[in-house]
Image 1 (cartoon, rainbow, N blue to C red):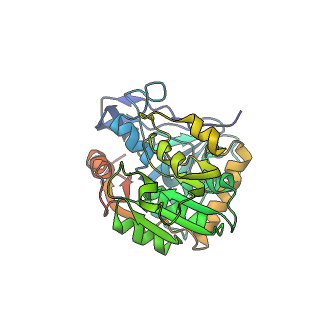
Image 2 (image 1 turned 90 degrees about the vertical axis):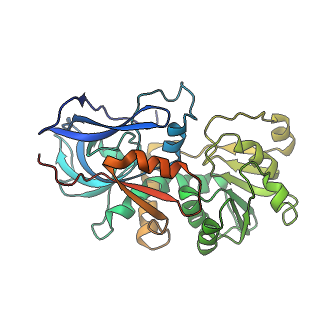
Image 3 (image 1 turned 120 degrees about the vertical axis):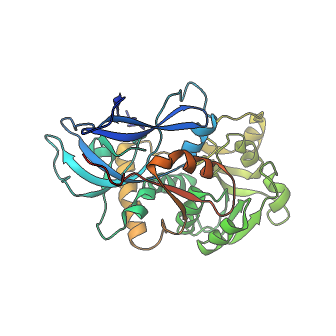
Length: 347
């Protein structure tokens, strides 16, 4: 059975003092608060991470907005999975990982906190010359590579990426390395489209509104649609637009659009076009680890920029303000980071 996202347990307490930490808890839709919890101890086969940076991902925003169905998420809950920090304690029978290692984490949710424990499977050691703030976004790169692999991109195919948020901009950089015939991207904001040109997009199109049909804007230049469509949008209803934008015998890779779809999906259109629809996450643990390695190498080789999209930084104590900022659509807000290193604390 392939491993899935886990939320490490965290015991909330009603007092301050030694052995406690700050953590963020989402008690209800659009309501995230700072609580106190016990600092966890690593069990056998676990390590403890002193968290420094956590990015606010689109999936966090979906939960914040209440856009996930109850069968997938319930409140209260904890968020945060784009993590970088330092190992500060190693449990028994853990080989290789050491106290002081700089690491990125994957498949760990609930990391808007000072400390978290996890198994070595979720840990990727980072070179210490890589600034930790740039290491947190490495968490998304394995899924980006997996999406590109599932897309089966070749130099004779036209690729459409819908949306140029944090992941969309990183995906544009990854997909450009697969040398598609044309790499077309869409977004609502000029600032993000300018970055996408820098990152390898051959064509950029600004959509006048979130509910604009993509082919109404790009159809004159690409009347047959696209061999590969990769939506990087939060709302599941974007799949309706993705199906319309796909060419005959095309392929859709759902990097985004994994939220609830509130519009009818015409599956006869999927049948008539002979479309293939793929999910994104690797289906085998070994692929997850391999893509983790490959993703880090792309960043260290200067081929994927995880720094330029960071636009805002907030301390953990102001995580509610950070979510409000991230939840507001604007061209100058891309990657919002939380600094989880609480200042002036006496443990």
